[in-house]
Length: 300
Image (cartoon, rainbow, N blue to C red; front, top):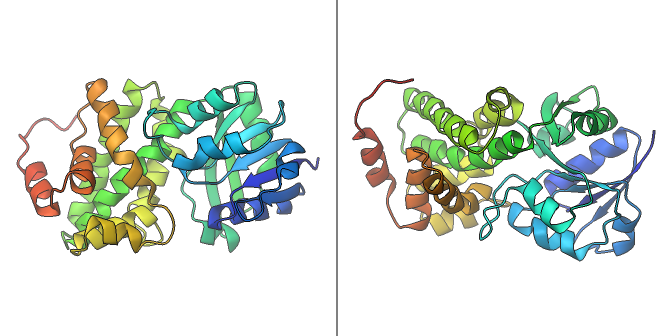
């Protein structure tokens, strides 16, 4: 059944999601800063929010949201200042609307090219997630429903910071073995963080957790990996981020992730190292040496 779907954000990912929704048979229009027509959102049965994480609250405040419209967030991050994940931002701004999160290993270029992709769509109620998953899925774009909103949100946010670490490692030429170890230990941090904040282990093992971490930490298509790679090659943090097309979400998430980890007593040395490089003026060499000097212990 065709539904009125409005995409908030006209960037690469917003355009890719709009194309998918049209291909699935829906009535689709894009709201953007260059086309801020409030009438578009006012007629929506679902809003797909495809703007950077730090802009989600303001964009939702700027548009007229129908009271029953589903709000599907595709941004991956944690809001600075509040420490809120994206579904929590939706719940604060539009508490009457169903909040969903679309996340998983996916690049806009692959989606636009019709290449096979699989992602997760989470809602507080599994029926809601599955309904919209069926409505938006295509043969080459498979969406799996989940009722673990915290798990899907955490995986999407934290993998961006961890991908910066992998980019730095590759930029320093530390090798494939180091990257494999770094991804594995990054996933251990993701699991610790997720469990402490209420995520389910099976979600973290799935597409929106491990799957997204593997993709984002190994591909030059990843903005976070690419920015990290430039830092590893010797660029300043400012130049590395400025030289990356689009938003490097991990650069905005690292500091708030470290703050949340401290508040919950979670050991996250890789996340802390990225924060030290991005926000505290530390060098990759200092943080690599600090990680390598950590006491040996049992792996599990």
